[in-house]
Image (cartoon, rainbow, N blue to C red):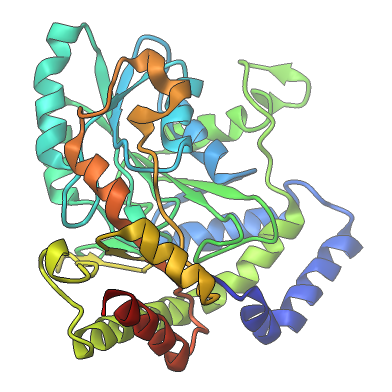
Length: 377
């Protein structure tokens, strides 16, 4: 799925010099490199504030907690996402409320969110916000979510873990909502050499509280205003990330070019189809969105057999996500059951992510497409 060595060979000297500078400074946590990266990353997102933290999971919690989401509240989100999307809501003391996804983009459906809002009162739910996920690197329909925010007085927190560099109608992910959470896990488009995360926000009050919460609720050393968390960003991770951030626009365009190459190769093989029974359904980009293709995800019939076929030929693939959140055993107390979100469940049975990264070669992509064509022949 990924070859980290190809990227590292290009930036090796810059990265090692940045790490050496941290070692020389002896300031390993929340050092000057963290402040520098926070500013650079926020600027790249078009947001006035950026707060580094220990992981993308922490960033989700930090963004919501700093916005005031807590016990007794409920937050609507998607069941088709990584577990942290839901667990971070629970960590705030709030309750996740799931709504189904759009069948084309796989993102949270605004119409489903509207239905969840309308039924919330009868269920005794106090919906205070929505946590949409910019899944696979494509922003959700932000126009529709802005209307929901305004009509229902909601907080909008972006789960932008997969979407650094993405945008909606020219506005970058990270500057669309009240706050946003990014992950810099090593497989992300902008990736650290370990775990790291970032909260961006357009609101000074959220920024101020997020900085307090990430350091045990302290503004002044040993004076704890509230119970926070230990979620500080290491200086070495920030230094590595700032090096990579300078390359990210180029890498993003290369990802988009690789996605277009897949589209072309699948079409040339006669595999691209509108319906899954007729071939492979390719990713669809909303014309209002700038897709950064964290993943290139197809819909495929006999998906599991196809994946096994590719594995036997040493071709990587992955399923994001095979078990929807409403079907996770650890979330059974939320009261959902199989059949509640049919669009999500169908996607979970059909999606397959293919290898995509800036350095992948066209001959390698051709090998992927040839193998898939052979499977369906």
